[in-house]
Amino acid sequence: MNRAFILSRKGDYWLAELCRDRLNAQGWSAFIMIDPKEWESAPEGTLHASYSPGIKGMNGNKVALGILAGILEHSNHGDRVMKMDCDIWMNDEIAQWLAYGDAAKCFMLHRPGKRSLAWGGIWSANRDHVEQAMAFENEKCNCPESVLNVRALHKTRGILAHPSTSITEWEIGMPRFGICTLPIVRTNARVATGKALFEN
Image 1 (tube, rainbow, N blue to C red):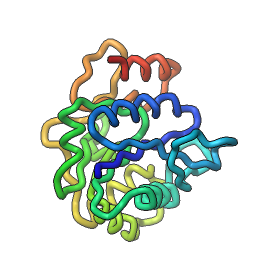
Image 2: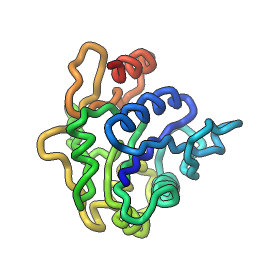
Image 3: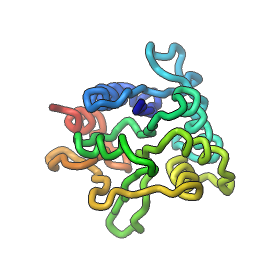
């Protein structure tokens, strides 16, 4: 089975629901995975994992390992699994590319004036590869969880970046193609932009 795990902090739950519904329509079995300690009452139907750092940002080895542990707990042997942030939109072709194959897969992020990097806001892999990545001993640091988990996938069996499509930081008025995320530097227009990104 192809299972997608959408991470959501409390303030972005509305966005995670839009992302989940789109992925389900694209053939994935998509679930919102929260850390219940952030909630007084966890939303019905959510999966639970211990990954919240309790502060702004998703940094450090404990956060990265908590995400991988949650994915493994809520999946089965032989599954293809995908971790993604809740503010990602993709077209049907990209959703299918992530769903199949033996390789772990991700996308490059190109930002003006900064080094291009393999971006860990979204990746997919076979479940047994995730088991190996969780056992990999990352150097202890306060790096983003996305960096740590992409590094662990790369250092175990490797990770493949899409050969022609990279992540686009999307804003209202831009075309949607391939795969898009909301601007990484959060703005006051996040709600309006997020709703527009997922409009049919």
